[in-house]
Image (cartoon, rainbow, N blue to C red; front, side, top):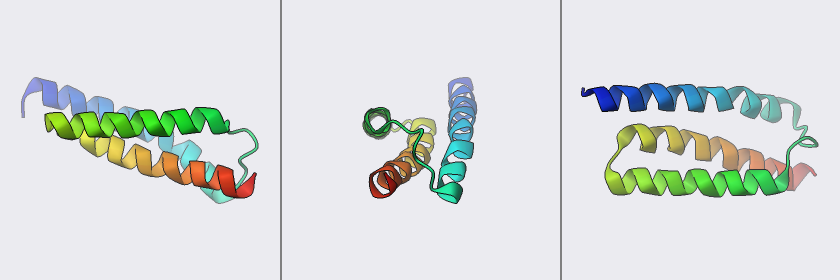
Length: 84
């Protein structure tokens, strides 16, 4: 593994892991009052574009992290629309 891949996997792990507690809290409580629909819409779209970018470059740290993050973000977005 090259240094740039190692840095990418470390960055991907940290940024994705930092998102997980919010996602689990939202899943558990179904409390979406504090979640901005506009922010989560933009965030989910942005992460989706990062995923496409990673796929185009075959940059697996970007692909893996953003696959997980877009799944969590989209789930929260759906909950925001359902439970508002």
